[in-house]
Image (cartoon, rainbow, N blue to C red; front, side, top):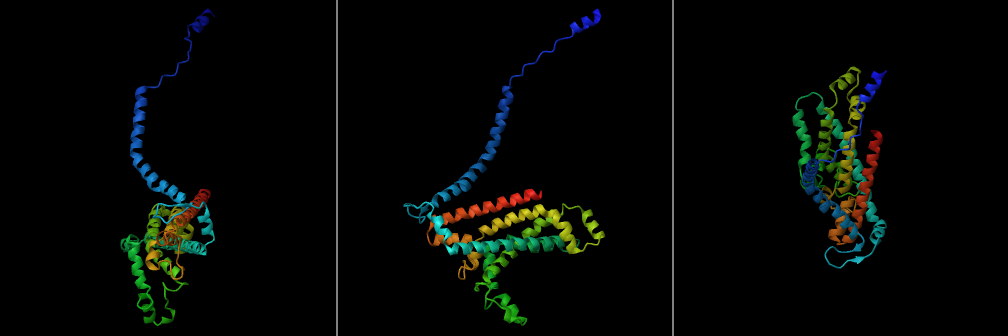
Length: 317
C-alpha cells in the first residue's frame, strides 16, 4: 500500500504548455510568397479593371446623358434613354431577331457538331482529313466569309441560284439576302457553316473520355447509330453541351461582323440584331447616350441568361 502511494506521488504532474509564439521568419516567408503571388496576378487584375469593369461603369454612367460622343457638352436626362428604348419598335425587332438567331444557331450547331463528332469518332479512314475540313471555316475571318457568301447568295449570278437553275429547280431560287422573309435565315446559315466545326471538335475531345466498353455494350445490345448517339453519347456529354450553350448564347448576343458585312441589318431591318442596332445608333446617328442604355440592357440580358443556365446546370449536377 505504501509502495502504491509512493508511485502515485512519483508521477510527474502534467502542466499545460503555453502556445508557442509565431515564428517571425516563417511569417516573413509567408508574406513574401503572398507578395510574389500578387505580383503575378496584378497585371491581369489591372487589365480586367481597366478594360472591363471601368468600361461597364463608364458606359452605365453615359446612359444617363444625352451625348453625341464628340462634344464636351453632356445633357443629363436620367432614365429617359431607357424609356425611349422600351418604346422603340426597332429595339424590339432587333431583340426578336437576336433571339431567333441565337436559338437556331446554338441548337443546329450543337446538333450537327455532335453528329459529325460521333461519325469521326467511329473507326474509318480519313478521319484527320475530314476533321480538318470541317474545322477549317472556324479559322476564317467573318469578314471573308461574309464577303464570300454575299457572292454565293447573289440573286442573279450566285452559285446557289445557278445550281438550282442548272438542275431544273429555278422556281426555288431566292433573293437570299434581299428578301425580308429569307435574309435572316441566310445569315444564320453562314454562322452555322463557320462555327459547327468548333462544336464538333469540343464534342470529339469529350467523346475520347468515354470508355470504349460503353460503346461495345451498346453494340452488343443491338443499339444502332442514332440510338447509341441519343441514349449513350449525349447523356455523357452534358457538360460539353452546357459549355457550348453558354458560348453560343454569348456569341449570338454579340454577333455583328457577319450581319454587317452581309446585309448591314437590311433589307428593311429584317436582319437587324442588337449589336448592329447599337452600332447604328452610336456611330452613324451619334446617339452615344442612347446606345449606352442599349448596351446596359444587353449586358443585363447576358447576365440573366448566364445565371439561369448556371442554375440549370447546378440542378442537373
